[in-house]
Length: 194
Ligand SMILES: Cc1cc2nc3c(=O)[nH]c(=O)nc-3n(C[C@H](O)[C@H](O)[C@H](O)COP(=O)(O)O)c2cc1C
Image (cartoon, rainbow, N blue to C red; front, top):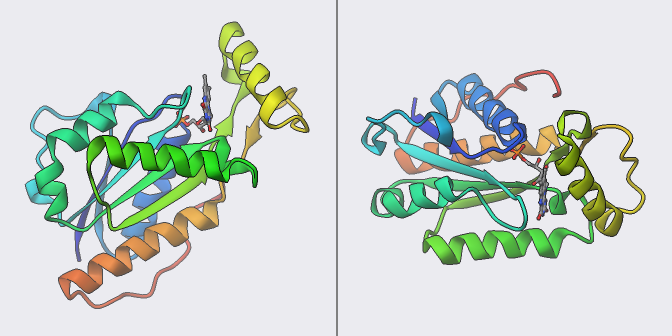
């Protein structure tokens, strides 16, 4: 068994849902996994007690959460000494045309933090128009009109491929098991679609 930290930033909650699914998948594989939201970081959080760390962030206005960047900056040396992974959640990853944009966000993050995670994943997020305030709804609809003209903005849009999230968690787990010399268990599918 290995211990995993899944540290993430989230604006409207989709990255939190994805982090939860990763935690559930890792636990189903027999590991210890803890999810920590940047806004609820315990004062005594230390990476010493974890064998591996996954870091997640979503994109707003082309940027990742500053708290996630600060976390990587503050812990770069420790992260470099452990198996690590990064996952990014954005609207760009939801479309074929957006792939280059999404990859650019990842590149900018890695360049800014000077961090080299062992595994990287990009997931489509969600646009829960029904939960946005007036201004955010207006703003996002303007962007959607430009980037995803065919999207029906009268209802919430969910783009996350949950199988891809589970596959990523299992791939990271297999990598960590290999590094630590832990036997690979049988992985099962973990939870309902969200
Ligand atoms: C105000 C706002 C701005 C956004 N800006 C971008 C953007 O610049 N590029 C992009 O690909 N996605 C953008 N998105 C889409 C988010 O990345 C997507 O909704 C994601 O699921 C958010 O994850 P979170 O709920 O964990 O914050 C934006 C979403 C909102 C609400």
